[in-house]
Length: 142
Image (cartoon, rainbow, N blue to C red; front, side):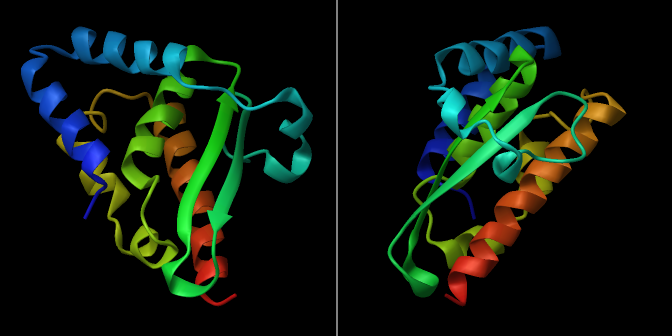
């Protein structure tokens, strides 16, 4: 289960024939993704386990399992900022309960990202997904 925006992204990726086109698209997504204000690029929002600098700031509206999930993010690497934008498309607008039900690695696999990212980038994506899932799980029980 992914957001409608992610479904649109998956459709776009179906039309991109090779990995280089998909890679460029992810970078373009990073360029157009609104970044995180430097005031929020602090240790509390930093994601450990990424080769690049990554910050994710959760923005949850409401309480309990039906609270709406969103986040802002930033990275010092353009491809990683693009991956943050992809994750934003995957999760933004879902409830915190739905966030926990998303199989992120399977959804990202639909885009063909799994087999083309370096081991370090893949570990970074997993670290970002884990941070998102933990944040949402904490909000479910709040």
